[in-house]
Length: 178
Image 1: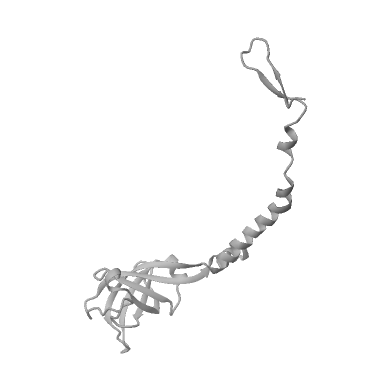
Image 2: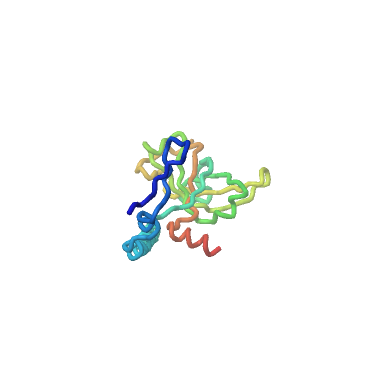
């Protein structure tokens, strides 16, 4: 009993293999029982493990904007004031009291650390249809790297605004609900 039949057509130099009685066919066409019984369980277990892990991994939305540290807070509270310009299309994603992390160009964050502040005022800018952010730096010139920066001039830098700190699982279900 052969699994295949070899035929040598006249005029051809290579034989042609044709399936014969189907000895190999059942192996190729039927799924092994262990895959049917345990394959689904393993796939469901992997999916559940993915959901658990995705529930613990935080993935924040951030917006980076250029800022200019203008000087002491005019309201008399301790701290400095920074102003940043935000494109109009991102203005609806920012709200008051959002945390802002500022790194200044003249003081590298790796050596000096970063300044931390909060958004105190959001005003539309008529000049370029953008939005101005008024940021109060909480610790004055003290940085997250436990360094004290000189009072003035501090100059320009970049601000990172964390606008939404959700887990990957929360983001996934948020997209499904919408």
